[in-house]
Image 1 (cartoon, rainbow, N blue to C red):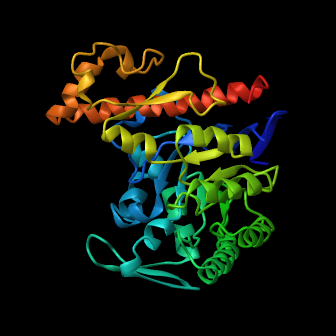
Image 2: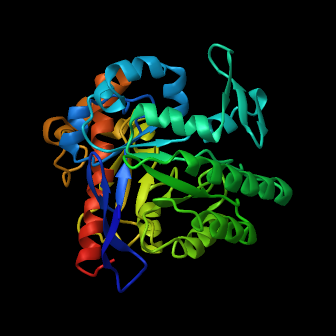
Amino acid sequence: MSYKTLKKSSKSNARLGLLKTVHGVIKTPFFMPIATRGSVKAVTSDELKELGAQVVLANTYHLYLRPGLKVIKKAGGLHKFMNWSGPILTDSGGFQVFSLAHARKITNRGVEFKDDVSGQKHKLTPAKVMEIQKVLGTDIRMVLDECSGYPVSQAKALEAVDRTTLWAKQSLRYRNKKQLTFGIIQGATDKKLRQKSLEEITSLPFNGFALGGLAVGEPENKMWPIVGEFAPKLPDDKPRYLMGFGKPHQIVQAVKCGIDMFDCVIPTRNARHGLFYTWKKSASISRKTFYSELRIKNSQYTNDMKPIDPCCDCSTCKTYSRAYIRHLFMAGEPLALRLATIHNLAFYLSLMKKMRSAVSLGKL
């Protein structure tokens, strides 16, 4: 068995677990920094290890297009290519393809699309997505699914659910013992469709399950009822993954709903725009107000010699002042992006540690 539950909270649906992969055991709940093209923007693999990242997420679609499978295969797989010895999860690339609404065609056989850079035509099928990820050699493979956007009609959402189930069954023909394969539940914000998708996908022998299509623009008052109801319904003996999610307080709430795995561009993307996440002293992570957002480009930090976050021990906070980092941003210096990304990733990874500790101590 690849997943083991160590402890369940008595206060919520939060839980602690271990997820075993070929490249290491991952403590749950965990956050995956986004290494879309085999790189977390602005930081090295060694720096990710120093920050305590357990696993990273790479994108099948982008790596298939550039540099291509021949290059990665020659390198000995994605781990060696990007010099990362820990586990890697690869998504199917389906979301990226479906976002190319003007340049793709979806049928039950797969997705035909044009490369958004070269214009060359490509086709992704459930089998091809599995084969690409086999060549990449990643630890966790996501199957090809159809992600409904927001808003979406019930008819379109139903079509996506049925196609996702069809593709899930086809994908399972290409399982192997070295790689874990996860199924994805779709259904937009329609509870009946979510239930249908959940019953169909969880009846299949996947190693884990994800809730997809819940970070695509829908308001929180439509998203949380789905997460709150369906996260606890996912199999108890398998890891639970909420795809593309979310802000710090949202991740805490999702863990309390029973989610184990997260990925999101928020910490790294916001870092590149000068937004830092900082801890509030003595604030409990169970409250939404446990952190602040510091916008370093604001003029109030021009002469501020304090670290970004006095409560953080990352290399950025131990070494540089707010005034200096603001100067780097205002001067357009690339170092600004590195320092900001290091801090925000440190914040998110520290948050996951705090949550694991809180669950262990019965406080979350």
